Image (cartoon, rainbow, N blue to C red):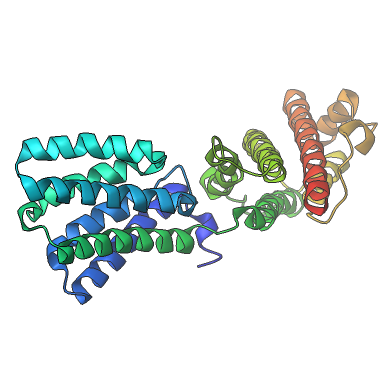
Amino acid sequence: MATTLPSLSPLWRNSLRTWLAATLTIGIMLWSGRRDVMMLGLLMAVLFINDNELTPVRSLGQLVGGALVGILSAAVLHHFSEGWLVTAIGLLITGCLVRGLGLTKGVSMGYMGCWALEIVGYGKQFNWALIFNLAFTVVTGIAMAQLATWVFWPRRPLQQLPALEAGLCDQLRQQIQRMRHWLDTGGEAPAPLQSKALLPQILQLQELRDQRAGVRTPAAVRRLSSRWAQTGSIWRQLLRQWLLLEPLLLQLPPRPASAPLLQAELRALEAALDSSAAIPPMPAAIDPAGTQNNWLQEAAQLQASPPLLLAIGQQITQLHQLLHSRGLVRQAIGRQETS
C-alpha cells in the first residue's frame, strides 16, 4: 500500500478514507449493540473527514466538545418539552454555547448532535444511558474517521515528498531513455508519456501548502511546504514541456547515427534528472555551440526539416532551464531540512 497510495489521486484517496471510516463505524456499532444510533456515528465520521484538511485531529477537542454540547443542550430542553420548536431553540442555544466556549471548529458538530437527538426519537426519553450511547457514537465515528485518515494519508507528509519527487524524476528519465534508444536504434516508437501517470504526484507536492493555509503552523514547516509547492509548479511546467517536445522527436527518422547534438542534449536531460546529481548548469554552459546554426547543421545531416530541429532545440533549452530551477529549489529545501 505504501507504494500504491502515492499514485492514487487525492479524490480516490479521500473516497477510500470515507469508505473505511464508514465501514469501521458500522462494524463497531453493530458489535456493541447500538444499531439504533448507528446513523449518528456515520454522520459524525463523514462530517469529521475534511477533504481540505488532512490533519483534522488538531481540531479533535473542539469537534468532540461541540458535539457533546449539542447533545446535552437538546437533552436538557427535551426534558421539559419536545417538538421541532424545542429543537430549533436547542440549535440556537447550541450555536451560542459552542461559540462562547471558543469551539469554533465544532459548531457544525454541535448542530448535528442537537439535531440528531430529535431524529433518533429519544429526546423524550432523556436519561444518562442515552447520553452515554450518543457520546459513545460520536467518539466512535470521529475516531474511525481519524484512523482512516492515518491509513490513507501520511502522518508526516513532508517526509514523503522527497521519495515522491524522486519517483517523478525516474519516470521522466526512463521516458527520455526510451526515446533516445529509439532514435539511436530504431524499431517501434515508444509510447507517449501519459500525463495522468505524473499529475497525482505533482498535485501532492503542491497541495500541502494550500492545506496549511489559515492553520497555525511553525514558520520552518510553512517555508518548507512553500518550497515543495514551488517544486510542484516546476514539475507541471516540466511535464508540459516534455509533452510538447515528445511529438516533435517522434517526427524524426529513427537511427540518426549522425545526430550527435540531439543525443548529447537528451543525455544531458537524463543526467539532470538524476536525484544525486548536482544542480544542472544553464543551457549556455551545457553546450555553448548549441546555437541555431548547430541545429540547422543537424537538420542537414538528418535530412529533416530545419524548423523541426529548431523547435526541438528550443524545447530542450526550456527543459534545461526548468531543471536548473528545480535544482536550485531542491538545494534550498536541503538547506532548510538540515538547519
